[in-house]
Length: 390
Image 1: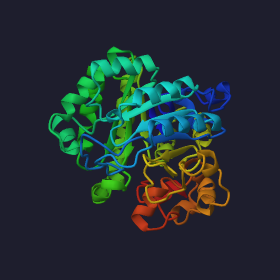
Image 2: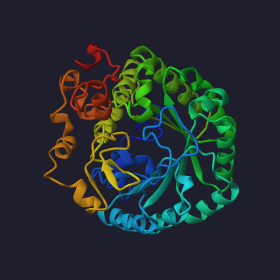
Image 3: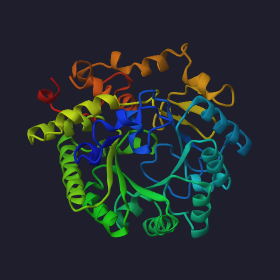
């Protein structure tokens, strides 16, 4: 994650991670990417079932199949707590379909971890929002990929936009923090201004702009990924609009996700603008360390399979039904996993000679493999010019 509001607009200073000590168990959620110990945030896809059929779903979900039981889930939460994981992000499919989700959230919070949910938002009723708030849920991320017409086309179900807004309203009425998740591509890039206007109108304080990763159904959208020029224009727009909101006194958090070229791009823009905070931003990006697949983020599937991140569905590291998560995550006999933990030493092409390698770590390896067949090849979504990386 690249915090546009933090880096470009100065809502978090470079000294903040040092002040918090940089231990993931002690850091607030908005600083987790700067943790020094990199205990993984775990995305747990608790179900393969979903009430929508999104064209860019990384998990390509449909009906429920071979899911960890409630008992197995409670045991998994205990494992993750003992290992020191700071956050469990409940995802799917659509996690709200599982009736035991509130109990799993309650157990997570009761184990001194943070619980967050990634959802399409359409199933958040008033009663469910009250129950989740009572469980101590920290955050709900709701996926919206545009306003009504575009979002419903992405979701494959008419009325998805309307129902998601109702769900957001129910959650916010219970004082649950809500953020939006927007996956950028050529079909919806023109929707960014409207979605930012929607944030203001609805009083939503957070938004994450995701770069497209070519996995699951999103493989069919590979040709509709943004060009380098479109990506730069989108980042400039996001930075400009974020600054406008913050200058107007609004407390918002704006991030980009899944393309660590965004960090150097923000820094280079600040340097061109003679921003006095540019050097501090460079230090903060170095603390971030770039892509964290297999290190600071991991994924557990509904059937217990463990992946390096939530997008990398072809790389199975083990299964929590067979051995504890910690034994899988620290398995030194797994050559691929060990390379992934030191990925900067193994990337090739432009990444290998890039001057930003220490703060990017070769960008998104799952996307590189999907596009080139080589997990250590170039990430095609890097939009930095040769003169910017040399």
